[in-house]
Amino acid sequence: MSLFPADIEELARRIVSGFTVKGFMVSTAESCTGGLIAGALTEIAGSSAVVDRGFVTYTNEAKMDMLGVGADTLTAFGAVSRQTALQMAHGALFRSRADFAVAVTGIAGPGGGSTDKPVGLVHLAAKARNGKTLHHEMRYGEIGRTEIRLATVRTALEMLLALNQAGSA
Image (cartoon, rainbow, N blue to C red):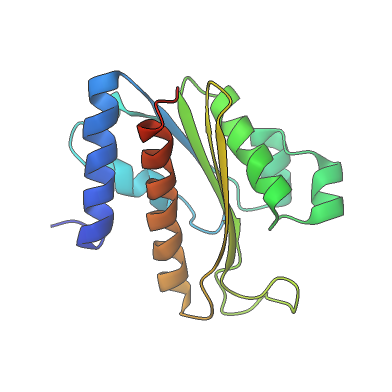
């Protein structure tokens, strides 16, 4: 029995099997999901061939220390921003042996939102070694903390699959 819904388990299974065949590895940089993306991947048997490492960087200090996110970026744009997500993905990729990295930063709620950055806003970035990068700004709405986090895991896994299908690495 999986800890995750069946659709997330299937996405993770597709990543593990597809990346294993190609010899690709993944790293994750997670804020609002707190390690759930890495958890979904490692729920799959054989994931040790694919998952290099996961960074849980909940605080700004952790984002700077572990991933190299710039203090100027955090000051200018905030932790929940396109710019921060892109720097997180870059840091996770180049501070690991991975071929692909995915990063997420958002507001899962129930509090912490604002008019500009409401609960349910999540920025996701995925990056391949060849430089191909994806960014998604998701506005899941106030669907509940758990559902926002699970929706973010789904989107992150889909982004990794999209980079792989694009023939990147």
